[in-house]
Length: 447
Length: 104
Image (cartoon, rainbow over the protein chains, first blue to last red):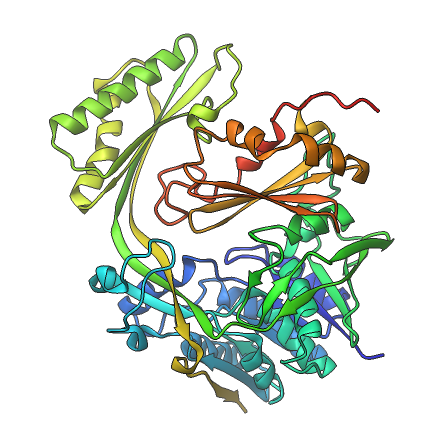
């Protein structure tokens, strides 16, 4: 029976690079996928593109390609990645240049375009999914609008025999489903296969999160050698049966427990997980450990895909100003609390306009605030953190300033001051009918 | 007994919604959790954090539960003032929930 082995070389934009090289060298894989685009990343990349039209793709693209492309090319392993972010065409051109630098010949890069729907949504009348407010209420602040494309266009690009397929926004599972469709001859309308393939893609998309990353809890869930965590490989058969595994002797662990955690990661109703390719049903999936670090996955199903694409809209929405200061030794907590009160009063004295202001005491209750179940004994040290959302940049600056000036104006012993300001690129979503999104493949070649 | 003694949890985010899985180490504890880890119990643990509804999805196929917590992330990853912008540490609140001891 036909089978295909696909490796996950990254699970987010800044992920480790060595595990991908290990997959290329020792993973016996047919395809390597780099997933590198979170909900808000593309809006950030779009701001880079506005500043410099040749930018706007993943900042680690060059390093990842420099290290992975020579081995991938030599072994004939196509790379599929969404590192194109807000500018896949420029990313494709850069990969050609990298190939030239590396002395590679006959490099073919397939660039998927069409996810950028900024012009299409201009004047489009619909409501935002999260707030139910009309789209036009944020129209003048929008910086990016990208549709989550599906596996169909990537699978089509694979028929052209590229060394790299580079995309902007696509569904994360679609990056994995596409090589399955291509290698195993699955029809896009065979929903049993598309559903199972999407389950596998969902399991794979966060890379190390299924091989023991984001999992360890000493004494309860021990994971060996996280410093050299191996990234996952899926071995998928023509009939849909699949295994999750990793390179032998790499760090980490693949068990039914790691698979279950990752299956439920970032999903809501497990019977209706909407992707661009289908509506995935996880409620019949089962896992079985068949060997050390090898888990069988069966039972993924799906209902037909919806008539729309989800579109992520990035828009400017004010600033976050922040300041931090540490206090240690006897009375650390009361001094930090006094410092927090001083900052709040100072911001009010200076008429700093904030939509929301938060004072955290790191070491006591900064993660869960009132829900913190902390023990009554006083910690040795505590770190004050004041953060606020402001409509104006200048007001955001003042928040960090008022923490910093505690050095000489606040309680004794304040140390390790830090301040920052960042612009908020908020993300909301709309649905767009499929026929309003025109996808295409652009080939970039190095002869 | 803390939930942590019999189950493990992972938190994920989408927009302003958090989801937290609860997976018993021993599949035989699935029924116990189904009876004891009720939405009310979880709501009480997250009352200072979650503004919206909490829904529990049962997955007998993998002996696990998925809790979906609406309006839980201070606006979501792009706008929250929280240190933990994704709410990734919320799984530890779930693990810290007290449950009646199991009588085997």
